[in-house]
Image (cartoon, rainbow, N blue to C red; front, side, top):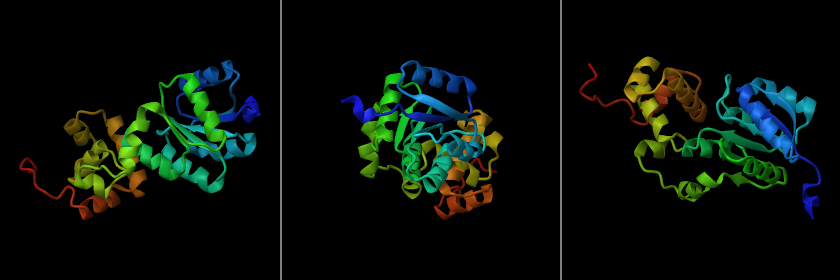
Amino acid sequence: MSEVDHKVPRVLIVDDHPLFREGLRAALESSGGAVVVAEAETAGEVPEAVDRHRPDVVVMDLSLPDVSGIEATRRLADEHPGLPVLMLTMSDDDGSLLAALQAGARGYVVKGAGSDEVLHALRTVVAGGAVIGSDIAARLSTLLAGGRRRDAEQLFPSLTSREVEVLELIARGLDNRRIARELVLSEKTVRNHITHVFDKLQVTSRAEAVARARDAGLGEEDNGDQG
């Protein structure tokens, strides 16, 4: 009856934090529910790892050092359409969720989920199903029903509210340090947001992002303190 799980899923973990990879490997393998056949720190390492180790499923982080997990998932979907990707990430925002699903991810679970939940998600996506973590599933129907609030979010539905704010400030000509000050964030966090914005808008430069933002009417109005 448990013959549905006729074999233990072979997993490739893609995450740039060695301690997280180690912990996830231990959690998955200690239960005997999965075997980790390979690990990768960057999206660039994924194609060779897939070709060499033939995993049944890829566990992908959203933030990678070279390109985002969303872009890495998109590439995998093109090159290995039958290989399921499970996003396992710190980010539980609506825009990342939608972008990951649009890129071809079969599942989306937030880091901090118990190993049982992650194992269940792995087995489900390997069997051809789809999984959304319990804490974000409730929001999905609202998202798909199009309950987007602000004009900018309608124009850029894959961006989170925070990413729209960052895009607005880029369009107003602020550099990363000024954006960090304005939004009370670290510069590293601002860089991560900008990477996600570029990826979701499919642009490769600040100038292209500014052009897209201005086309949508962002960054144009003078807010009084813009001298």
